[in-house]
Length: 144
Image (tube, rainbow, N blue to C red; front, side, top):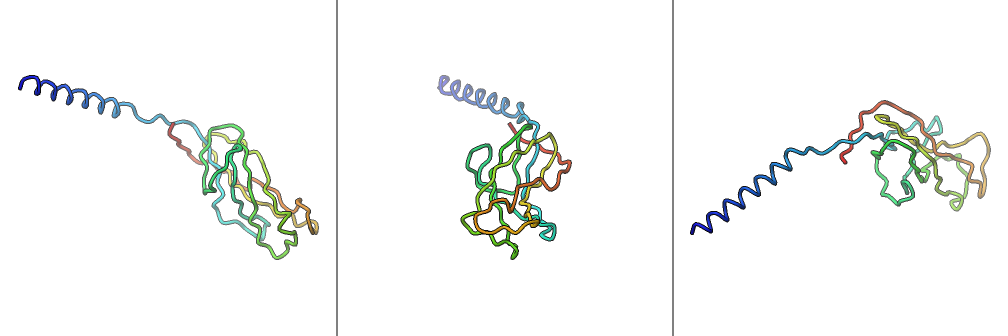
């Protein structure tokens, strides 16, 4: 009977120490910046939404915000231009890659800039380009 009690007490002590260790080591926060593609855009300024397909060469499911470590990150995006002025064939609608230099506590809003200064017909892919259309201060907290 004494051995059984002693064993149970040891288990309780070990469990208490393990829980104490978890509680005393808070998650470490790391510095980050944010790249976003969720804000409504001013189509009269020829800005349209984009869908992110790859981040740093890795396929992703597009989402509104990407919390990223500081430094350069490669985004592959597809445009969602729904302008009646767009006369480019569907086969010319290709993804484009661009770099975003992410700084700590900054938010970068990305979009597709529809280039309306020329008439684009057929296979011409110069009808749009990915852009950062707005940058703002934004506290970013990412757990390690």
